[in-house]
Length: 221
Image (cartoon, rainbow, N blue to C red; front, side, top):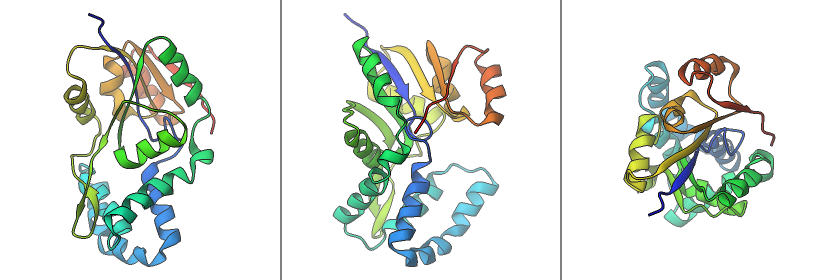
């Protein structure tokens, strides 16, 4: 029996060169500036999350809800998909598609594991003609007239839990690709580690935690 080999990719900062939640926020306020009122009303959740470094599930739910409250389910989903895809040419790293093609030619399956919503991640992959069988992201639901996270924020060790839920235990950790130290649990488990355009302050942490066993990549949008 052939054991599947997987290459695990983060999304924000790894496949695209910015935070997709910030993209949603910018687009949402541009289209409907009045939503700043909703965002302001929910700002204590965002502030407490930042100050006390709390799990980001509630904060992201507050952000998404403020941008989608009052929309029909269909229109909310359309907004979440379109807001990110409209920025495709400006934020999708040029090196992603050739990298995916090379890995697939080697028999390695691509898995995107991200804290971003599966809805707009799949839309972005489709816009770049990348059909990934497995996308593991934060699940969304409709609550009180707007979109919120249905599942715990897919971040740090939660990514590992979700990977095993989706793929089981019997597979090869071929490689992991990320820009952020939050993905150290995923990087440590992988045979090959690739760090994409990290912040300078994170490089010493990667160097220490991965014992210098990684490749630093400077990708371009």
